Amino acid sequence: MDSKKYNNIKLSVSIGKGILSFLIIFLFLKSGLALDLENYLSRFISNSYLLFIAFVIAVSAAGSILSFPVSYYQEFYLEHKFKLSNQTFGAWLWEGAKGTMVSGVIGIPLLPVFYYVLNRFGNLWWLPFAIILFLVSVVLARIVPVLIMPLFYKITPLENEELKLRLEKLASEAGLKLKNVFKFDMSKNTRKANAAFTGMGKSKRILLGDNLLDRYSADEIETVIAHELGHYKYKHIIINIIVGTVFSFLTLYLLALLYRISLPYFGYFSITQVSAVPILVLWGMVLGIVETPITSSLSRKHEYQADQYAVSSTGKADAFISTLEKLNEQNLGDKEPHPVVEWFFYSHPSIKKRIAAIRRVVQPEALK
Ligand SMILES: [Zn+2]
Image 1 (cartoon, protein in one colour):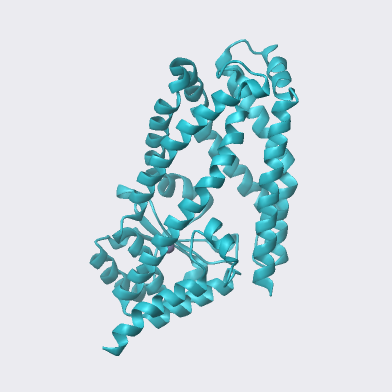
Image 2 (tube, protein in one colour):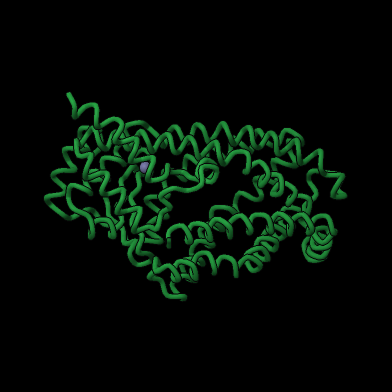
């Protein structure tokens, strides 16, 4: 079966990439190569902040070059092999370059801030840095849909009048203004279809892929919007920010502790040594393994809630079930992933479980 194969390959490549990255960073530190790079750069740069920025950029660039073949295989080759992508190689490269530029614009200014906090607060650096990251995440949640998404997609208000009327009713029941429903041209990159609820405050919006609008009936689209409105109704974005913040405080506290303890093992003596900082990345990967299943299961809980809302607000369980089935097929989703894989990685419950959960609530009502 194509979908099983596609998902198994994707999963194995991701896990392999993770393990390999960990080993490479580990060897980079342990072999003294990191320290050599710091010493080499310090011949040209005397200011410690500039040295830190240069070191991080050099290491990130090397990482991108090393991982390029894997990224190509994952994002380009595989998507074409399974006939999911519409992108030319040039377009894929350009999207990647834009992505790198955006993360540079957001990430590079954070580097001197991080290094300052490390120098100024010593072993307590994690606390002010966690506060800074929280503020950044709130700002990002507000600006991503308005300023960053448009760099990648053409986003236009929904035009279909009949659909608009239906959605207006649904949206006002959930307390959201309709002007915030947009479509975006995801079909330029992929044959997959998707919808999302994003943003905060004034930037709150529902985004519908054009692939979805073209191929699904008005009833089906209505249930997709209702699902997204469910995320709004249950305040999932705010909950995610709060949970994410608690996690980030905890993670940074543990990172600071593990970083300090493991410094001597890699031959360092101070937390402010520029080339010691990749140790944080290693520990970050380890902590990520612990956190992924927790955040995945919270996300799956939210999806179940939004599904229930989609059915209860529209009363169109059949249309919603057929939408989920069509979407799963179109996106080559695994209908029944291995339970451990689902528990660990899946941000959405598998299609089989979602449909079973919908049937569980719909049937008793139909019998009344
Ligand atoms: Zn959802």
